[in-house]
Image 1 (cartoon, rainbow over the protein chains, first blue to last red):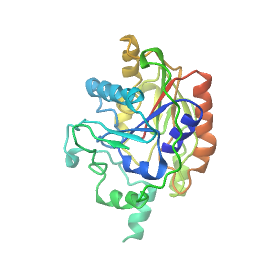
Image 2 (cartoon, rainbow over the protein chains, first blue to last red):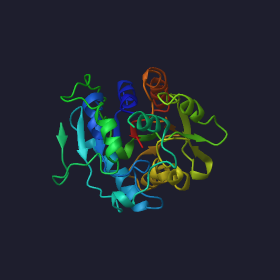
Image 3 (cartoon, chains in turn purple, orange):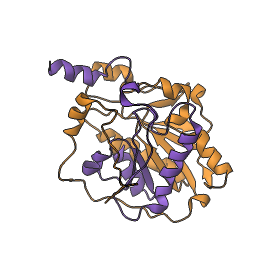
Image 4 (cartoon, rainbow over the protein chains, first blue to last red):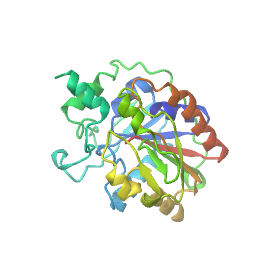
Length: 106
Length: 175
C-alpha cells in the first residue's frame, strides 16, 4: 500500500496513509502516515460506529494540512473499544501463507 | 520524523498476535532504508478540495470481476495485484470483499469500516471537504513475494485515474 501511496504522490496528488503497521514506514517511505491502533479489517472503526468512523476520517484528512515534511508519522489517539483477546479479526481459516508458514515451522 | 499524540505511540502489534508479529517484523529494516520520499505539496484547503479513498480490502463492485482468491490458494506466495474502481455511491450491499487475511464480514455489513464513503459525504455536506470523487479504489493488500505488478502497473493506473478526475487529496487505508 505504501508503494501505491508513493506512486500517487509522484503523480502530484498528496496522500495520507492510515496505517496500523506503521513501522513498515522504515522500509517503504510513505509521504504522510496516520498511525492507528485499530484491528485489521476495520481501520476507521467498528460496524455502525459513525462517530468513530467520522473522527478517524477527519484525523486522517487533517494530516494533509498538518504534515510539514516527507515521512511524517502522526500517532492518532484512538483506543479500540474491545481488548485484543475479545477482538475478532482473523479469517475463518488461516490465510494460505500463514497455513504454509505454520506448517513449515512445525 | 515521528510525532506523538499525547506522548503515546501506536502499538502496531496490539491485535496482531505473536506469530504474525514474528513473521512481519522480519520485513522491517533497522535502521530505516527507504528510498527518498516523494512529496506533492498541498495547494488548497480541504474545504475546497476533492477527496478520493483507497482501501486494500479486496473490494469489488458486484458484477465486476472479484479479486482472485483461488490463485492465492494455489500459490500462497502470490496475491492478486490488480485494482478495482469503486463508485462513490457504493454500499455494503453493492460490493463484495475478497481477502483471505482478514474477517471480511465487518466490511460486508458496513463498508465504512474500511472505505468510509458515507462519512466522507457527510463531511462534504458539512462543508469540511470540498467534494467527493466519482471514483474510489481497492487493491488487495496481500501481495506475497512480489509487489512489482501492483507498484508498476496498478498504482500508476490508479494515480492516472485520480488525476483525470482532478483529485486533490488521496486517503489510503490498508486493512
